[in-house]
Image (tube, rainbow, N blue to C red; front, side, top):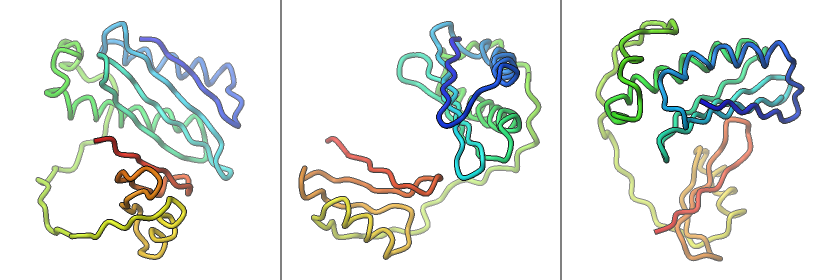
Length: 176
């Protein structure tokens, strides 16, 4: 597994890089050799954010993002999330993950609360408004939701604006 460290507004110390590489080596046994782990570190409003994304088997990926007061703690918070995703989706991943590595636990994870089955409890019908992105952002704020679906007046396609964890906004452009 190839590990790529990316720093934005943050200086990665040699010690942190060494710790990350050592802890990420444990995940190499879960994936084939073509897997790529991208670890992005950045400072956000006097806190430190770490995003770990592992791409494997062509178009598969697992991702974890954490924010805390200490970058060293972030690695210990993010890795159990990654391992949990691997375990949760191992039936979907099938041949992409080495079966032998799944039989033994390498990282301690707290016992998970029993998962209850998801149920559809509400259905909403909305009218698509033909507006621009700025108007969609205003509408999202007005309805106090984390997302807003609209018909983009420039492209004529359905788009979604959403509130990101860092407080900024994102745009999803659907292609159909």
